[in-house]
Image 1: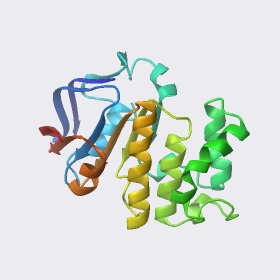
Image 2: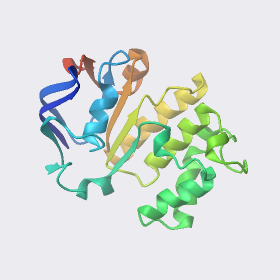
Image 3: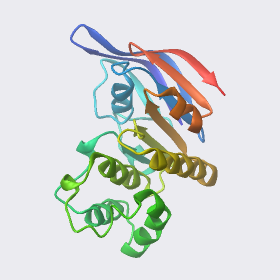
Image 4: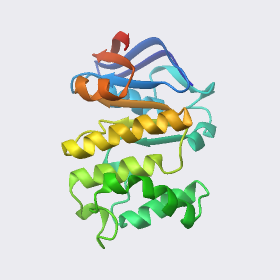
Length: 217
């Protein structure tokens, strides 16, 4: 599913990512763990072609992400608030996102049902713009929008941030069930090893932009 070849990214003199070779197989759930500044978000941005690599490349299904956009239809991601359109309501944003993937309103409504417990009555029907929601509910909106079109590759950066313990537990269950039902490849990052181990059978420890340990639970 994902092949990383001699991938390097520097910001000035600082090495942000330096990964010689790494393979993530279809259907795997991989947790990327490292302290703040370890390079987790930078690596995700390189995979999603949001940053230009200084050297090397990333392939999704043998497609170089920097050379083609064909991989985008099978990919869902949420990195931070910049992925949201904050002057829309959550409903408008979900319908906009779904429409981009050719989904009809009825289909979107149907897919939102499985997230009702996760939303906890605090997201839909609030009659307010996304920008006026709490950080936790913005996080929920971003995660749901990334999963709405049932991508074969799902990438979530620090998905447990800002969520209360109950919501953290629910999203862990949703991610595991999604992987079991669809065999989607799921990448999540966290500075909290416990959260990641709860979800992912495979863990990559990142330090100074380099994967220093690859662990299969």
